[in-house]
Image 1 (tube, rainbow, N blue to C red):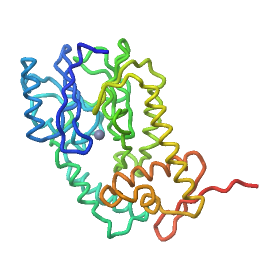
Image 2 (tube, helix red, strand yellow):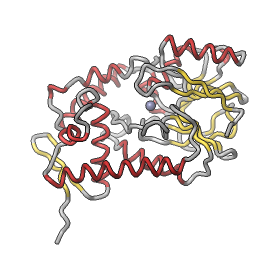
Image 3 (tube, rainbow, N blue to C red):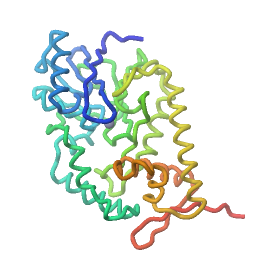
Image 4 (cartoon, rainbow, N blue to C red):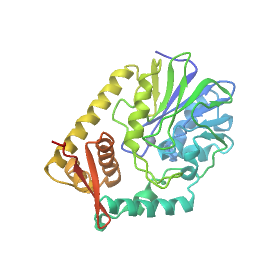
Length: 320
Ligand SMILES: [Zn+2]
């Protein structure tokens, strides 16, 4: 299925995920959905692709961000004249607010201590810094939230779809059943729900629970195609969601089995779940692990207790 109004542009990224898809939409305004990572290579490809349509970066009226990650937002720096539209939670990231970066470092240091991550693993400030490496220094000119419409982009409505990022939105075109999905649902791999520093509340969010709610929402919509942030268009949407949910359940079951043997910290579980990669990808694998613990806890199957500032998770025994 092809929608003539939506022109996909694939840009290279320096990340493991590979190319990112951004979309050019010629409506009343000239809109880009996402911008790509801030690399010379991506900028060159974008300029070339626009030239094929007789356009330059200066012609772009607005960039709508599906979320704040560098592979989607970085090239905003190449479109200084364009309005920047996105969820309010993008702002701290896309502006690289020094106060927020400091807050991230202290928040994760505190959080990872609770999760039982030994100090020797503390490369957190590096991880935080690295996440900004291919990003931009811009500011939102317009914020959108659940139900918002966007000027110049007729027929599209904003859905808040947090989980992969707290700033994540999808754009839904009800008439055609199309969705600009960002990283909400991807064919090549599951989207990682990532731990984030809270922006509004004091407590951390539960990104996997948010993510599960976000993809379950899609099951209720009359969707025929999702234009994703990575990989091919998705038309077998229900099947893919079912597959993602099933995989998540079986991983949660695996964590439950570990906890049936004895209480664990989140870090101990993480090491067992991802023995080959947890050191290199501590942030990603810890986010995934904590997600499964949040899921089990939300279903009343496990609980946690604290000793010396460290959380230990244990199963809830069924009362006889
Ligand atoms: Zn992302």
